Length: 355
Image 1 (cartoon, one colour):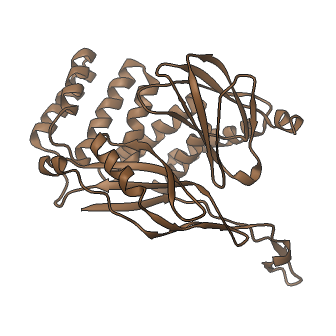
Image 2 (cartoon, helix red, strand yellow):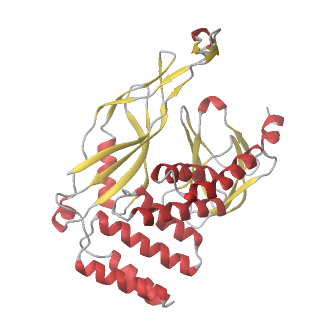
Image 3 (spheres, one colour):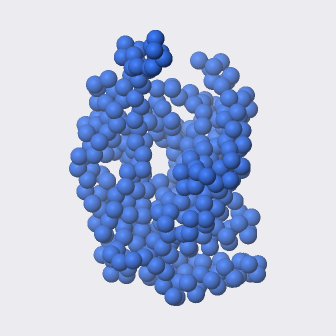
């Protein structure tokens, strides 16, 4: 009834190689600086399917991130994304807290693994598909959007979302209609939010060409909002889905520009507003950053990297420099709803001068 899929781990295996006389390469063990071995699950408790949703035929998915402690227990779980439904999210959180891991190791010593993510699918038996009623309402919404009757489209989207029955096939198509509505409104943030719900779902609920177009649009919107690490991650998914597509060659140019920007002395500024969600998150491209333009109240910041987690108070006078040994990092910002701020990633020269 439920499927569990690991999305990513934190494996860093540094095994340098050196050239030999015959031109081959062999491991040079005495050059080995550090070996980090990923945590491995040894006990997984399946989440309970909410009874009310099972009776109604509702399905959902929940993506969580969490820390695996040196003793193998799970700590600080967060719902990073989901198809919606608080009962599903609570069930996933309750289950993940009971998971047990063989901890990650660095040079034989147990360490935290701070960027572990899983996605839990709550699915019912039977072939997924959209109900006739859903299809009729979906087509009506698309018609409203095409005719620029956006107020009617919005009312219909809200009403459709309140349907008592909801499967993951319908979920994908609903968020596609929602993204089209916000695109017509010119609201990039809400359009991106809807599209991210689509790519968080399985890629076989939409036609391959449609899903590819969704990924491309997500890639573009991440670039527009200066969220470059997410753009690079999305581009890898685009290549995996359709490696021979002409789009890959076309957008490789933008990837090259992102990589050049990362090495430049230009600031990378990301504007943010805290919404209904518990936190705002940002995957860092660089290892040094700060905040400015804070309007409202920010309570704390949680930095989760591959090999380290830390929590700080936020100040506009402070710069954070993350050691390379921590690995790639994501920042989670907490505070009052509607608080506004900018997260600024600093160039390499600024990082060098601060060390």
